Image 1 (tube, one colour):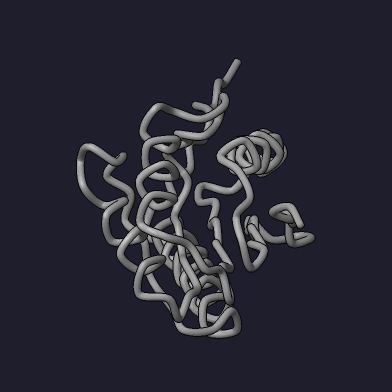
Image 2 (tube, helix red, strand yellow):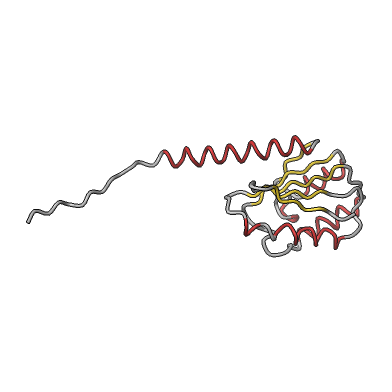
Length: 154
């Protein structure tokens, strides 16, 4: 079973639903290509990507190959600066891979790790709401100036 990519409707959230077993490195590349096609359609300042690895079982060699794939650069849009990442896993090896992604040689990604998909989705939605609230508050702090044209008297 391949990695399933889902764009949550009306939200800047892309979810990778991982199978129980990753069959090939090519499968990861194809999922990256599919997901990055959504980037141009999302006008928001932040795009959250959730890796729902669920019950994914991998070995250390697969972790190294996956990290290598990420560092070689993915398809266009892969390194979009708006992307923030959350990972869902119970597997210590998947959690190790997520923490490793924060190292410079693996792309310097900051990954937030959760035990369940529901926790990750709740966190992502809270973060988006907080950012939107901060954005609105920031806009309200601008002083309003009105420019009136000088009256001309004939």
